[in-house]
Length: 311
Image (cartoon, rainbow, N blue to C red; front, top):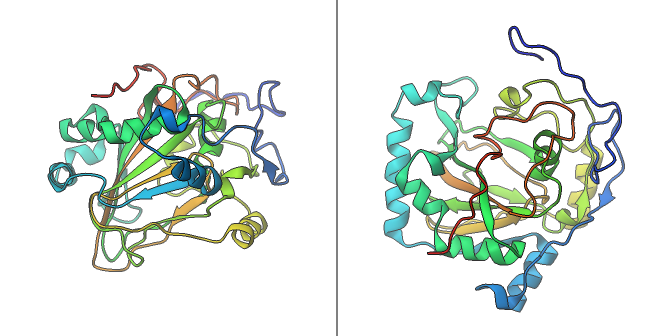
């Protein structure tokens, strides 16, 4: 759907020659194999040992309990409370509001707007692990807070981040990862992140055609760029489901192509996480593979590829 007064953009009817991961070209496609490495670095390049690198390569994620100090988490939790109380902020393009309420669900580009959250996104422990897994210097492709309130926090359906980042943002290769940082306890009951371990080795092309300004709807409820039921059932049968949980300060790194989602939160216990997406400097976006203009910079960085320095 085009915005008011917008001019419809041409949509590609077939993949470009440089598109190694075509998706959304008519009917659904068969599940395909991954073409890129999972681990790009070596044990000598960072804090992770051989066994941790092997686990990440095979499962597509790594979970750490209490990786961050309580004081570091508390400063970010206080920042989140201030942001949630700011009614004017809810009108910003960077803010995503829960469907059916005025609760803040997500806020993007937090590493550019809040000092405490910027320090968290640039934390040397996080950056060192990201650099080792990606085998290069990294920049922040995206950052956001996800707040899933108690009682009515909404679910987010199964998806591979890379499918959207490739199709709508033009990220060429599977050489980026997400880092989920728990600001509150993530329990089995309050809508934690769920992963299909091993699914990152498969690529699931999706059906449908990407509309203009698709991000306005997809950030609230993603319906395009998600696996069909048969593909998802096959992935679950092959790989199973895991939900890395932990107290505030726990951290989960997961590959850009691992299938993941989260259920709704009907408990009184809110779940708050900061997500940082680190991308290799050798994997900066090109023109989106759907043929449409890029999404806004607060969703997918295209202007500032400054490497995050280890302090």
